[in-house]
Amino acid sequence: MKNGFAIIGGLLLLVIGLQAVAATDEKIEVVTVASGLEHPWGMAFLPDGRVLITERPGRLRIIEGGRLIPKAVTGLPQIAAVGQGGLLDVAIHPNYLENGWIYLSFSAEGKGGLGTEVVRGRLRGMQLVDVETIFKVEKKSSGGRHFGSRLLFDRKGYLYITSGERGDRPRAQDLDDHAGSVIRLYDDGRTPVDNPYVNRPGTKPEIYSYGHRNPQGMTLHPETGEVWTHEHGPQGGDEINIIEPGRNYGWPVITYGVNYGWGTKIGEGTQKVGMEQPLYYWDPSIAPSGMSFYSGDQFPQWRGNLFVGALKYQLLVRLELDGDRVIKEHRLLKEKLGRIRDVREGHDGYLYLLTDEGNGRLVRLEPSQ
Picture: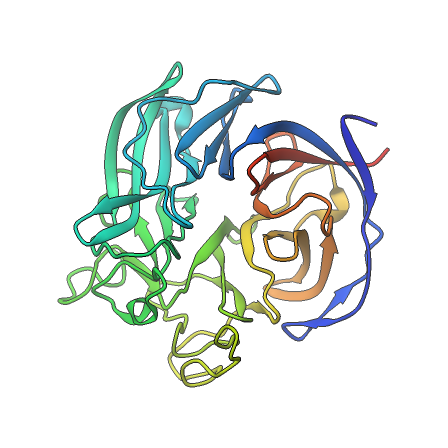
């Protein structure tokens, strides 16, 4: 066995989002790739095998040859690490080998408080150069909650950005506010001409969908190319959604969650005409973060499954699908690794996880021998 531990996943039967959580007998080996990361948040795999990792306090780290380089990358923008904010996600351009662009999302200070922003730059040695801002949530606000923020390129090269509603619920229903939405841009920050709210007065043209609470997972379906997201609910009501242009995903008018502590109703119920139903939801909440479809060769039995990290229950969720319908949920690694912040499939076909701890880790899942 390598420098990790073997686990046979576990247990049991309860109903979550009207689906049975199934027992599993997965044989998995967990290998620590790197430790000593301070609250790592996002990761991206470079074509040469290096791994980029963001640390929420504001550092971009590199793993090269299986070793965490001690020095952090310099040249990053000014980052406001407040509450849930800080340096968040990282993504590389689909044509990275030609243009070298690396994208970072983070919380930044501005007039009125804090908000999610996105920059891109190129890596030269251990320095980020040619840095330019391509997106800002224009309305900054106080508080350290609900910044989002995942980054994703689709097959046509559009960039998607998730933006939380900053703990101010009505903002998710305001089309003249970037908060609580999924943003769609060209790779240089320009607004696509076919975005649903282009040239509509009183709206932000960058908005692609709205009515989102705090989306911290986003991935592409490997067959359809659809953009899938998940978002934190309040007490209950974590959701998975397929993102379509101009659709309203309901928060805070409809939700399967309730107010923290009191358990009282939020909004108008769980359904309303003109608002989307989630593809799947969790009640009680698992606090999802990070999401990836699996399409590799290392775990052939997992192909087509959707993986979601969980902060609250410190586990990895594996969802079996029939088209866009979840037919079974498996829970792996419960309380074995800590809070799982990000989930990605690597170029080598293994599944990689980040643990959100003061001494966080990047781990690799391999079939147990």
